[in-house]
Amino acid sequence: MRKMIRRRQAEQVKRLKRLRRQARMELKESQDREGLSCSNRETPSNCKSSFQTVEEERAERQEAVGDYLLVLRRILPDIVEMFSKVPDFRNPRKIKHKIAVLLMFGLLTFVFQKASRREANRELTTATFLENLQILFPDIEALPHHDTLNRVLTVIDVNEIEKIQADMIKKFIKSKKFVNYLIDNCYPIAIDGTQKLSYNFLWAEECQEWSYQEKKRYSCYVLEASLAFHNGMVLPLATEVLSYMEGDEGSDKQDCETEAFKRLAKRIKGYFPKLKVMVLLDGLYPNGPIIELCRKYRWQFMMVLKDDSLPSVWEEVEGLKILETDNHLRRKWGNRIQHFWWVNHIDYFYDNDKKTQQVHVVVCEENWEEISKDSDAIVEKTLKHAWISSEPLTRWNVHERCNLGARYRWGIEGEFLVEKRHGYQYEHAFSFNWNAMKGYHLLMRLAHFINVFAEHTELLIGRFLHVGVKAFIKFLDETIRGPWLDHEWLKKKLREPYQMRMA
Picture 1 (tube, rainbow, N blue to C red):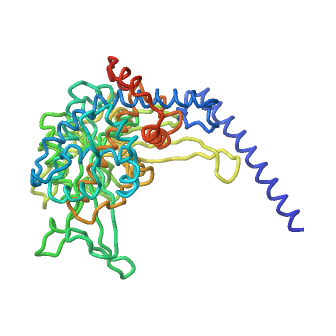
Picture 2: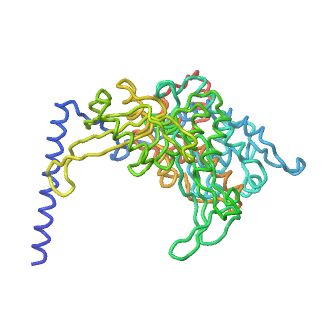
Picture 3: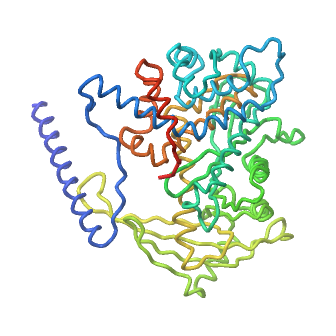
């Protein structure tokens, strides 16, 4: 009897799957007829290996590594040269490995997504890996132990690593690599915070302290800034680690994200004093001091405006939207029908009405159809977004500022997911020394920058899409650590002229 019941249930599930599949096909055809086609994202291949012989596999591995090294040849030598200029406080008579070799070894740990210092020691110090690495850097005679790098990171100024990353971005900005992805002629920078580490013991004096279920936890919270372009490319830019030492001892108030934002913004302004910037911020930031700071730095901004934030602004928006009858726009975007409406030139008073800032508010109400999760019925979905803009909204800029700018703030949250779950070990300390932990974190961010940049070059984007980012990096790692490469062929490949272009 139970078998019969289970069989009926299985048949019902199969029937529902068929109906839902058919309903999705019909809905897509209907959307295509109405011009509501949603772009289909290419997914990695799910097929078996295409290599029929060892020679085919060797040739493909060699081509993949050759293309990857062509891109790295445009990036790594500059980074290594900057590494060599980082002040080294060690005794020159006792130095076995130069500071540039140590930092590059740490960088490669994250480029090839090693899970720990122990794994990196085991897999990145083999004779084969060193021999293949010498194709790019012939001067390297030996690779260090990660404990040596850890000791160095405890004493050097690890912020120099972030400056190197900023210098690389300056170089690419100067060569106009990102000019096709600007928003209102500005570079979109998304800023958001996330927790990096949390333990039940005080592992460093700088840890933030909080309670969970009547137990104390000691954590490291990080504020990150990244270039978030509308083509999906999110490039790590700068990091501010919240520290207990930055809090107010008098009131026993710990460091917070808004205070960290001020320090991070000051540093970004120092790196790029003349760069046109649009900061993309979540609902934590719409307040007078943050808006004032952005205006001081001459940054444009798009900030999420929650329903319960800035009640005086919302009150004025509701009152004025009836009068602003022309400030409306209906359009199609992907598979959604959007209705934008906005109110410009709203005076926002703060600091007991002593100060004021003029802001502009835009609301996007959108609806779309999709298949229900429980049946094959078509259900209509609705969603509302609201933002504060630094610039007045018009029919000609509302799509660009909202759809291509503000909405791609999610890119930094996707970046957190990749760094935490897809190989970069964001939540692994690598060292319980605070300064060394920051150094490893900044090396990880720089490595992620290199891989994302390589992924979006014309030469490599097809390879990354075919098997997936993590799988392709693993494929490269296995190849470089194995006896697959013909050194003479690779040297000839690297001598070929190559102009790096973005996809």
